Amino acid sequence: MAARYRARRPRASPLWQCLHACLDDFHAAYPAKYAKNLGPLRPEASGHFLSFLRCGDLAHGFTRIRCTDCAHEYLLPFTCKRRGVCPSCHQRRTVESAQFITTDVCQPLPHRHLVITVPKALRWIFRRERQHLRLLFDAVRETLLHWMQERTGRPTGEVAAVAALHTFGAYLVSHPHVHVLAASGVFDETGAFHLAASGGKVELAELFRHVILRRLVDERIIESWQAHRFLSWRHSGFHVDAGEAPLAADDAPGRQRLAEYLLRAPLSLEKMSWNATTRTVLYRSARSWHTKRNSEIFSGPDFIAALSEHIPDKYAQTIRYYGRYSNKSRGQRARAAARRGPNNPEQPVTIIPAAPTRAQRRTWRALIIRVWGADPLRCPCCGGLMHRAGVIRKPDAIRAWLTRLGLWEGAIAIPPAHAPPFTDKGLWGVDAWDGHIVEFEPGSEREGLPTRRRSKSPRERHLSYTWEDCDLQDQEIDQPV
Image (cartoon, rainbow, N blue to C red; front, side, top):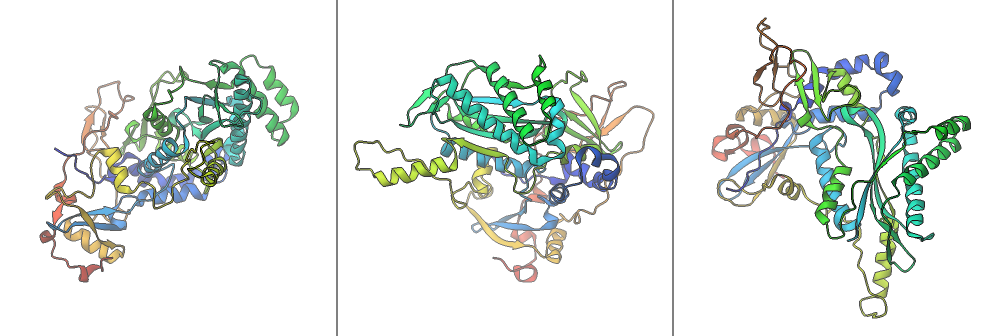
């Protein structure tokens, strides 16, 4: 049986419930509690949180998707298209960008995955002054170029790399570091690729330490005596993880997975559980060497503050392309190939595809098919192709539609669900996914709820109906487009 598309339930998300319950408390407590470490509250953070609360919510507008053959119809809500906060919209960006990197940027060559980090003593520089994050990009580019040239013996070689900046670590702590997907070698002037010898991870970390400290001194962020102190440390804290072995040249699926890992969201809903009674968040991750636990408990405002730190600034670049993979280099090669033409036998023509236009990028339908394996425009009743029948944006029209269909929940300002009365029999929690009550065993209150995502249960009454079930006409509510 073919998979069937089912819209997500945004208000069942533990992140939505946390923001809805504690966003006002976070704003009220920010000047006194969080501004000292995080600086002034950025408008990007507040705007992203409010947009996420409206993302996927039918009460804020939707598109009617209708089958012209059997009149089956469902409602498709609008999305926020924000990065950093909304896991759904961020995942769409991730899949789209990873596909572009795999097919249009990376060439069939061996690739390495490098993770370059800075010590804790320097992380405060990038935490409050986010404009200094560009220094990490610049230092990684310079370090990678000199390291690859030294490993291949080509002092004029050109690297080919994609770098992604992460400001988050486990449990959403501030941990600025850079992930690099780089070809395992350099290109010479003739375009030939020279493979670099294996190893050299210690030399790469030491070179990065000197480069980033020099740049920090040049920018007058730290003093010279501080840089000499960092250079004198035996265990400097500058670390490079180069993996076990490079990816093979023909491993395109591996590069796709690696590109998606580079562009992943700061948090995962599968690791998060929201307890409405205590207004706390239980977040699971790998076992911490510091706390010796595999979970952390946040208050609602503390969790929102930790997440706000990893929202990128407006127009900030979190992905950069270097050397052979830069936009300039790919464009120059494409123009040179076009000038040579296909009839020149002396120089082989290698067509380098340009960056896709907006119309060529993956559509919403293609992304849903790739991620979920279900076609959202394939009618589940007759198998026909569904089309857009209209867009509902007016508040009165939205409420009229959803009230008749039994889907009206109000525009965000709904009271939180009441918790069951407290008893002395034991501690309990409410599962954020299906609303069931789970009782904890004595002494296991820190373990929280299971975080593995469960399969979505059918909700035919809410997401699937025929036109005969609704006596509203297009002319009464809104004109189709």
